[in-house]
Length: 347
Image 1 (cartoon, rainbow, N blue to C red):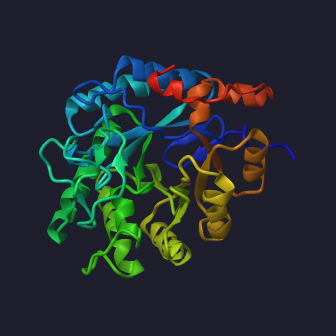
Image 2 (cartoon, rainbow, N blue to C red):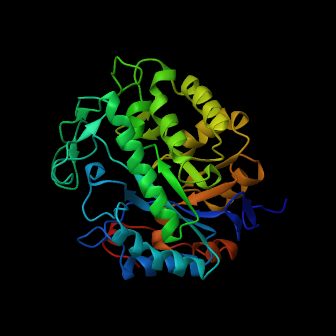
Image 3 (cartoon, rainbow, N blue to C red):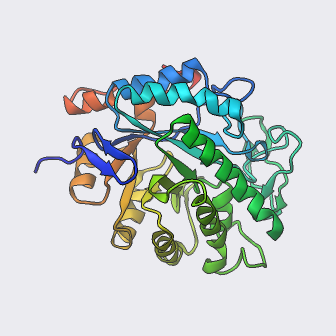
């Protein structure tokens, strides 16, 4: 069977992609002191575009200082930051590649060192366990968002979405996974609220749905992707406790609201033990665009696309190590293996 992986793929509202390869969003930490993109970042993405990737999902871009939790990550909440991404988008587009801004709020996966005087906020007052590897301190003690503060968070995402389109991004991805703010509402292991944003599945998905509804004021949802991670490896297998019931309801509501692009992420985990398993359970519930992968071999990626589990396949570390990943896979050439030394540069 001829593979669909290298074939063109159309996304309503975005246009035609030259193939189904997606560079996954990965935190890099090379923004300048004002959290703007740089020439180095622009060249990094342009190199992957020149070498054939169909769609780039940027590193997470913080929507407001209160949502920051990392060293030197980009923000998108003012005009100067927006202007800094224009060159990135122009360079990527010159190679006929599409690019989305991944919009991000860390919630309790943060610390006061990063929030510029703003409270660390979450769905809960309980701090995340463990150490923040960015500053080697325990995660900050969060304050549970009050009901009348939800719209302030939605406004942050709305404004970043608006700036994203002005910068020239083809679309945006809302980061609702990996234990960050929106996941802190979805995940029953974290969300211990007693109001209409906690408890039942209907209540725990309310924050994410209201956020998407609010985005309709600034961007057509055809241009919006959502990343979720119901299953991932985190000190062993970590999953939403009611994942199938949650996904059944959540995907139905995503569909009704007009969302058409979903990214099931497993971070740096075994695909078949985590997101691949989820995809097989929910593919019949989601007839729209579905992406995932992160660490698949060419043979595995071909099978996932040809069998209809995935419409597009993501790779993360493989794209850091191999800017020409698409060409290498097309020609069945060996890939350079990722190692941690590559984290320290934009090659």
